[in-house]
Image (cartoon, rainbow, N blue to C red; front, side, top):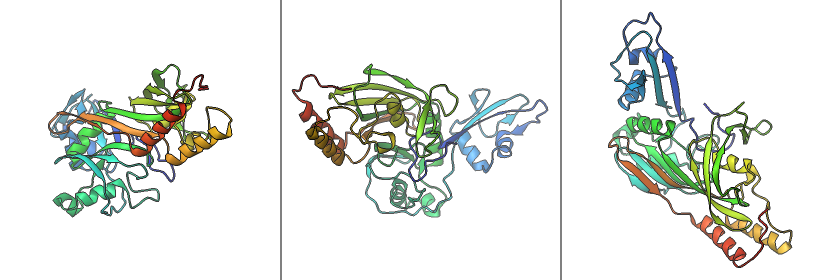
Length: 350
């Protein structure tokens, strides 16, 4: 499980669920699979295993099985399970959130920038999950404390945009499997320094903890460390010194878009952690420096928005697709650059 960055909400990643693989011994006696697994996975109950099986997340030799399946010698057992909630008291709080879809199984929220997603690391109140817990406070399971809103992915505190939250453990298991197997659609809009070349491409490189700065992630192209990560990008607007880029995630690692764009020399605009909070392209004229500093004030965060989220409904199987428009601060930033660069010739992007 990837460790979280100190003092910051973890980025979108795959550390919200876990994957196991077991091979039954040749002398294995017939035994229900939930009983078999409860002795092999730490801190797991038979109820959680049965929920995982109901969601189709326990496979034997590649085929989903029920919890009553009896393990046989040589069986290859694979399982994807959503992590249980952390042992942090969850305080429901009446905080306004933008819910764009809700049914009995899940909630889709358009998160504003600046809101931490999950309690922890010094942010025990005021988070998105505190707000969702308030919204669900009158549901019997939430009132009894037996259930909590379930996260299967995250976005950074200062990233805006779409998140799905499960309301039942069955939904959480179904969604966890989709994210693990990369069957979801996730597209982001970023504003980056410079113009990536080519203007459409794929960034591939393991992402892991930075060697010298534990607050940052880094790319390990030789694959020696970190986890496999793939980002597809496309420039959708060239503004000379900066560009508006569409990024599609194939994997979901901590700070993936931020660190991948930094890796190819195009950090996100005003991304303090990855060097985008200073002038990286353009002239040395005082007027230009003043203009860029005003842009930093307009968008006092890294320029990243989770625009599209698509997945299969965990109960009906219907394909759901949600889209969120750019927040006002990013619209204002892009508009200001359009006016600045409009009609100018020979802009030096490098």
